[in-house]
Every structure is written in structure tokens, then in C-alpha cells.
Image 1 (cartoon, rainbow, N blue to C red):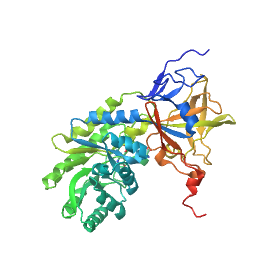
Image 2: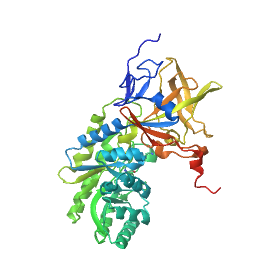
Image 3: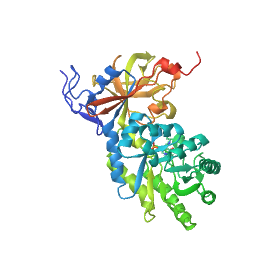
Length: 440
Ligand code: LLP
């Protein structure tokens, strides 16, 4: 008989071996099986197939509440960054908690409107390449704020608003030239990046905007990158933005909003530091430079809200050894989760049912015909057999949204767990679904 093991929480509050109820799968000792809230992941894989994205509603709610608590001292609106995870079921959950949204395309805005028409009043529209059609949709739906990223975009928005006889509330996204100390692909706040307007040139643009009757200057916005764990970078950029706000006010601009962007990182290594503490430090870094300015703060977090809430369940198809190198070939691939291939990102991988205590060093790879199709290289994992289930952790953000149909693989199904309830929020995509728009 195997010795009893204590239950172990992998991601608080909702991902743990053992689970909250005693409905463990028959034949498996309690505490050896991974649960999302009250639901055994193994039962979800059996029922819905793999690869499967599973999200915890409790974790998303807890993180939204932690943000609200950390920023309760300042007037603020949390605009969840839709790009991190845009599945309607997730947006509905976030909207239900009273949050607004940060969108970067007309498509994302349509998703938000599908979930709640009235949510438009709490939408900010960011991005360097907004088209006239996207601006028109945003103006007609009455969004809260456009984040403008160039002089040409400012002109197009003024003209579009004039055509519709509307006025557009705007902030200019400034580039503070602050290093975010993160992966170069997701760092955005240095002068060599395509984002924002150099902070020194911003004043000229504000002057031009103020002369346009169809534009209303209301804010300053900034975003320096993603997966940032050093809160000092946020503070540095907010200090520069606060100085700009003071200058703009002196010049007669009525600045009400400051949009601090998103970017707060999560721990992919699974360090169980408290989120409350981390978010507290972030809130202090963001708000300290704003003291005395009487602004309404906008926040655009994505990853820190949904990242740890998601796991990707995958089944081991084959074990294989080439020379002495071991591979686990699983049924998920880079088309389901691109982060390891694209950024060399680390995602913890754990067995869904704890079995062998023997450890091996192995690569975990997908079936796609690319050497870059991997989830882990030379990873220490407990010995895994063909047919076993693995859970890839922290995939709630930039997981399903970066999915593709490469190798004519259908996009994975997604389920949302809420206590003991399970809802399919995206069905598995069939080959027929994929071919629907193509000429026969
Ligand atoms: N606001 C703006 C203007 C952004 O560009 C982004 C992310 C966010 C907010 C949300 O940032 P977050 O809080 O999620 O860090 N695919 C990459 C991440 C790309 C982030 C792009 N912009 C990844 O998988 O790491």
C-alpha cells in the first residue's frame, strides 16, 4: 500500500491535490488526484476530452477582489485586458464582478458588447493600429476612453468623430522610456518600441488635440510591458507620467484620468508568495507618485487576473527515447499553447494523478512537425506512462487566445469550473468548423 500523502495546494485558492469534496475518482486515494475547486480534473478529461483548458471561477473572482481591496484608497476602474483571455464565458464572469475592459480591436469590443451592451461605458480602447471602422464602432457604442498612440491616429479619430457628430474622450499613450526588465517581445516602454508617443513630444500632441472640437482631452495613459515583477519599474514610469500631468494641467488641459496600463507579473515557478502582498506592493508603486493629483486611476491588468486560474489538460500519447534523450509526446501542441515556443516561457507541469515517485528527466513535446513544438525541455517529472494525464499550469492568460489551427488541429475546448459546477465555455473545434470559410 502506498503511504498516505497530504493534500497539496498548487495554486491558491482553487488548484490542489485532494480537492474540497470527497468525490475522488474510484480507485484513486484521496489527496493523490488534482482538483480544480470541487471538481476532479480527471473526470473533466474523461468527459470533455483533451487537450482541454480548465479555468477556476473562484480564482478569477478572488484576484479581482484583491485588486479592488489594494486600490480601495483611490478612485479607480479596473479595465480587464481582454487580450489575455477573451472567451465570452470569462468576460461574462469578469463583467459580473463589475469590472470594465481594455480592448485593442473592434473584435474584442464586439465580444465585450456581446457579454453586456452597457459595459461600453467602462471600456478603454488601446492599440497602435486602430482603423476608421473600429473607431466608428467604439464611438457608436459610447466607450469611455480612446488611448491614442500617434499624430496620424489623432487626426483620423477627430475626422471619424466629426463624421458621426460625436465627441471622443481621449488620452495619449506616452512612452516613458522605462525598462520593464521583462522578455524583449513583451517590453513596450522603451523609446525603440513601436508603442506610445515619446513623453517629450506628447505636449505638442495634447495641444493639437485640444484644438479639435470633436476630441475631448481627458487623460494620460502608459503601459510599459507585461510579466513585470519588479514594481520599481511601475513606480518610475508613474513618476514620469505624474510630472506630465502637472505640466499639462498648467497648460490648461483638464486631465481626469491616468491609465496605468497592465503588466503585473505572476509566478510561473509556483512560489507561493501571497497575492495580497504582491498586489499591495504594486498598488503602492502605482499610486505613490499620484498623491495629491486627484485623478481617477484606470488599470488594465490581464495576466494577473486570469493567468493562474487556468490549466491545460493533456494526455500522454507516447513515450519515446532517442539515443538517451527521453520524450513524452502529448496530445496538446504549440497550436494550443504557444508561450513555450514563442518566448521560451516556463510552465510548471504536474501529473493529474500522483503515481510513481520515481523521477525522470524528459522533454514534453506536442505532435506538430516543428522542433519548436515543446512545453518543457529536460524537465524533472515523476515517471509518467502512456495514457496518463498531465496538467500544464498558469495558462489562463495568453493561452487559448494565442491558439491556432496549425497542422489542421482544432482549437481546444474550454471549461469553467465554479464550485462543483462545470460549464463548457468553448466547444472543441472540428475539422468541419475549420474548413467552413474555405472554397470547396
Ligand atoms: N494594456 C496594454 C496596452 C497591453 O498592451 C497589455 C498587454 C495589457 C494591458 C495587459 O498586460 P498584462 O497585465 O496581461 O501583462 N503574449 C504575451 C503577453 C503580451 C502582452 C501584450 N500586452 C505573453 O504570453 O506573455
